[in-house]
Image (cartoon, rainbow, N blue to C red; front, side, top):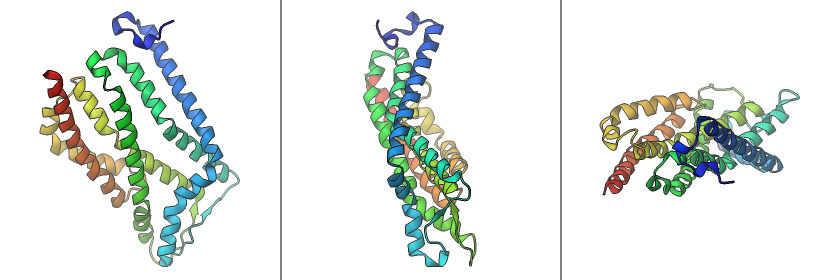
Length: 253
């Protein structure tokens, strides 16, 4: 039996589209489940990696009254922290599979020329997501330093393990997902939903919207993280308009 994803949209009725979507979703969830089980086996190294910026900050700033330790304030805190790391880490590890399933679902609606962008689409998405997560991790100690400094003097820092893990992982996911926006913009230009001219013409409103969105989606809410996310995204917005213009021009020739 041939793969239904290779058929043309006209040959695929609506119910088959829904079955195809269900199949892609199930495969994505299975990939996340396998990746989460993998993360379960390396929980301690991953936890140490995520808490390293906090420990380094406490070592370099003794005036902050912290020793880099995390605390479990309930019998379920440790279990909850482990599950969150495994689930979030599973989503990150399964990202290539998820992106591939998304691409395979939408590929029947694309032309032959557009289908050849599959590999660049997947690779660039993974690279940009990794860059976003790395930037969030790199700015974590600076964000924590800002937040702790605002708590005032003679205030001891005692972080609950579940809340700290959630903050760090959500920051990395927010940065990673945010850095995927240029891929979406280039794709929308390729399928003629938006034009490079329109993106360039509206760049002032776009940059303003990027700063507002960065302030909203940054879990820590500090200006360090907001600027670290908004400034690169503004540059990537302009680059995506340039890349889209080059690709559209090349396709037209």
